[in-house]
Length: 313
Image (cartoon, helix red, strand yellow):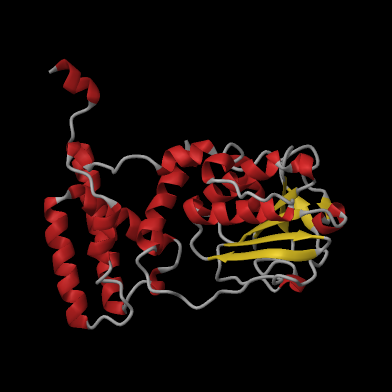
């Protein structure tokens, strides 16, 4: 269930991130062509939990996938799960995979791993560990704390792919990593998302969502078109006000849209990424809708008749 929720929310993140203006390149970790330094992690879960290992030394020059999780979010865990599902199937071809959680609280990370064991990769198939060097991770890696995931692929201790992801997205980022894995293993053809994880494909093809009490759904194109004017970085206060008025007017007639805006705004705020979206004036509206429209949705849910009562009437 947690993985299904993660994939649905990952679709939401794609909807809003796809309307943002192009951002400056983000760098994290060794770049393509650079040497992959050795480092130590402490394993979590499994029979050898608590053991310190060096995933680079263990790989001994063989192809390796390293996923550094800077921030645990539903989208980041969804991406890790999807990519690892594919990576496990490539183990017979020599690929070794390690997921590294960066943390300032090892005890809490261990507790999280136990709670989320059903949603993260199987430690019998993928090496799961945490860096004991704090949130910065291994010093020799130069990891960027502002990203959510740093993904590295290497062979013969040389980096062949580096993806620094601020907003991980299964639909796009998993496919990029799948292609990089296939390439380093000598494949001519890159895998599709369906090849990597059929369940992820099914979730991303879910029909547009309806709102509470059966109200009409809202498609991605409409969602993006309504929010784009609000979150432009160069929007004037008057532009923001007009865009907000249009959003509120549309939301009054389409509760599914209202719920989706609230859910997306809450995700942005919870991730600490609010400052990346529009001007301060726009951010005020996002904060307002995150609270007010979430409360409205909860009230509608409380007022809706239960399935049992509906059947009895």
